[in-house]
Length: 299
Image (cartoon, rainbow, N blue to C red; front, side, top):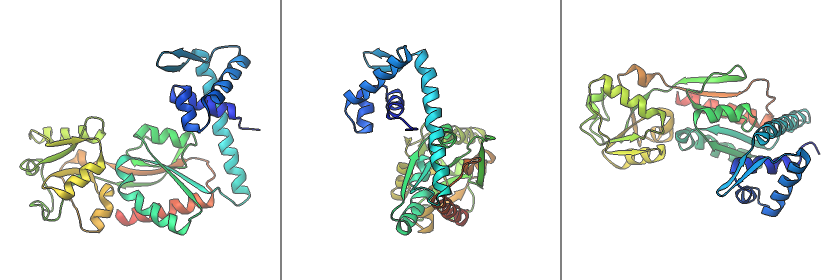
């Protein structure tokens, strides 16, 4: 068999940091996982993991082996994709890596419509940070990457790149809702719902207010885009998001997106990419085409 169970078990133990957690994720017994790890260590003649009180950590030899294991698994997936495409199947799964805000903004609408038309296709949607999205696409763990300001890579093909400026998001009955454009100082009298330091937007928004000489004092901070959106819907507060993150609410006129007069806030791009040279199956191509049509309409 090209793709050994042993490789899968070893990879999962390395990711999970323990045999027990790996077994839970794989839905097998810890004994079965541990047996495969021990067999591979015996074959290599080296311990691949340090057994620590709080889990397992790769040894230097383990790092070398896991790099080979993951490369082998990626190559196997690519072979499978090519064979399925040659048979005209293209697989029955679409895998997309995207960001926190998009997975509860623009993406769900497309997923629902696609699932209704293709009930036998499984869609796997993972949320990740910027660099992890790119890495998942490069590693073949995801077919499509969708996110803001994704780093360019010669191994990636960018199919779409949209301007996605951060703007002020408020409810339709908010005092600022009818304004055509806002300055940072216009926002200060109202409760500010801001991203915390773990999100890139935090720095962009902070710098925008500092450049305008406005002291920013958030009433709420969170790393959840969905919480920011919900609070803007149900309070007199305001948050700063790209329009794509609130696309369904904008279409239903439940929220308003107002441009902010700041170049840094405008320098935000939504990008859709795949791995260069990857042979995408018909199902994935159909999904990607529908996603691009939806994003084009939102743009």
